[in-house]
Length: 179
Image 1 (cartoon, one colour):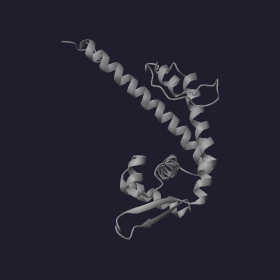
Image 2: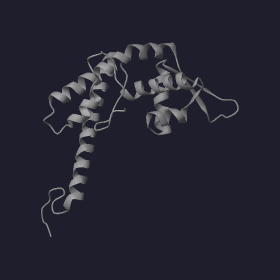
Image 3: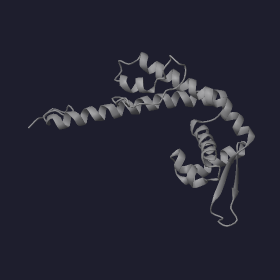
């Protein structure tokens, strides 16, 4: 029986694979946090918005573009990954700032339709390059510090190709090219 406390010690190849998977997951989590911190700072600095607020505005905009129909509060909660009560508070903050409007349906008083205001559309127009730049810089900075247990293939996946200046179709690390 092994008394070592090192991950996977004395547990064979399966434990070693599990440890590698956990390590990659931790690297992904770290990359996500560092990008999120950068995005949060930039959005606060330039737009006085939290990342969750900007994300909610984008979700409302994308839902209306995709479906040309109303976006219910419950659908917004699902789109941004927070509870319905947290989404209600977030929507109230954005409504107080003049960025969202809400209306209740006559046939179902529990359903709340969420819409962007013209001011929100301007915030999204101004915020898109700020968000893009913050993500690009964070990925670049992480690449510079690659020696700190950052998965290089994941960073390569996140980077945009610079040859044509535009984003390519994303491809997960290790995925095969289509013939």
